Image (tube, rainbow, N blue to C red; front, side, top):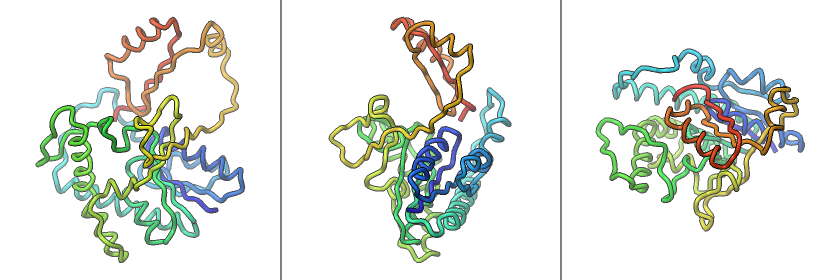
Length: 287
């Protein structure tokens, strides 16, 4: 089997697909990944072919100050141009990277072109999420973003309304550009970019204990377990000493975002209440 893994994001988006790609490679399958260019050297050192896509995420992170001032909102024309450029890049790069592949595995929430590329090439397509919040459910809200101009926010605490707004955002940002590309390839128009991207049965790559899907009766979501890349490097002496002091610590991580100021005392008090040590990962940059 020949598999193309595609994701656009930071290390937290990239490493899980590298983990699964490495596992499949060890089983004798052919794998390649399509990721931001700053991960290329690391992944190629694992003997996995890389096709770069998008900007260098680490350079973007390093260029932003810790406290980024509010930015002037983009105009409708600027948003249209950025969406068109993003969609065009994805269609072109993924179509090239997926040559001779049997399946595209697209991970995380910006894979707006991957399924169309797979459809045109007549190959399988899978979407994978790492956290429940990426996938629609009545049990939780989507990542909250301010409404685009002309969009009214739904009723407070209304998950259905929030997910409807989320779908409208995808359509407003990418619908026209995706359908124009699909038309140029002889593919039918789609009316819901997000649902088309996620499919009717997305994969959910998270540990069933630490990150269970909120509805155990929901057969639409296939929970695979977490995709973890083994790391055999020895721990530092200081870290070994810290871990040997008592019970295993509680780890709080914030991915690619900085922890809110109010989170510090809450985490500390929670760990103290359980009589446990605390390890906190603050993230790489503020989104």
